[in-house]
Amino acid sequence: MVITQATVKDMEGVMALLKANHVSNMTEEEKKNGFVTTNLSEEQFVRLVEEEDGVTIAKDGDKIVAFALAASWDYWKEWPLFQYMIELLPQTEYNGEKLSVENSYQYGPVCVDKDYRNTGVFEQVFFASLSNMEKRFPYMITFVNKVNPRSYAAHTRKALLDEVVDFSWNTNNYWMLGCKTSNRP
Ligand SMILES: CC(C)(COP(=O)(O)OP(=O)(O)OC[C@H]1O[C@@H](n2cnc3c(N)ncnc32)[C@H](O)[C@@H]1OP(=O)(O)O)[C@@H](O)C(=O)NCCC(=O)NCCS
Image 1 (cartoon, rainbow, N blue to C red):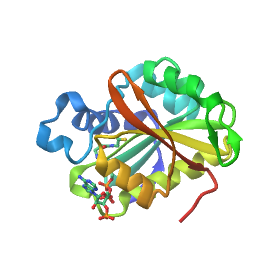
Image 2: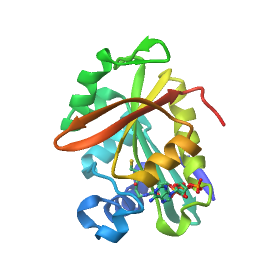
Image 3: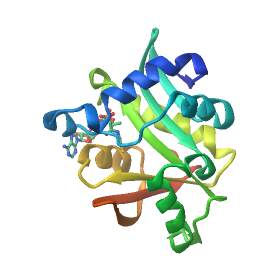
């Protein structure tokens, strides 16, 4: 297994894994093991790689088996949910500090191919992504839908994230989770 930062050449594999885990393409049974709601166009993928170095992947041979996305709030601001989270930041304290678009970034979505779940790949990709962003930001922030208990369990038990605040948006209930980028197991 190789954990590395993606290049534009990895787009097809990442997009295929994202599509397979997107809520719009999944059965109710599949959703019990998690789902993602963020969509990404090819143009957004290219900018994420080239401007943010924001795609961490796990490769088994040539196959991309996991990815984690991460970028500044400036990158994410065109998605309505992230606009809402940006508004929440200044009202939100974590670790005794007010959050901001300067001191934090948004991580996620993250996906692990179903054949590679519960193998440790999740933690490897998560901490590689965190370490890559540590040079730019002291805090990492993400969101998890409250009806995604597998993701909540993985992020709080294995990625060691804290609950920052909970919030509702567009009829869904979410946890805002976070950690210091220097956090390690
Ligand atoms: C979320 C995801 C990245 C986690 O990676 P993973 O390899 O599955 O994570 P792990 O299996 O190592 O850890 C998940 C934990 O949740 C537990 N779990 C599994 N299903 C669960 C459920 N329905 N409710 C609560 N906990 C659950 C597992 O037992 C495991 O904990 P344990 O090892 O302590 O027993 C992966 O499942 C995935 O890609 N899901 C689809 C996409 C997704 O949901 N992405 C996140 C969006 S925020």
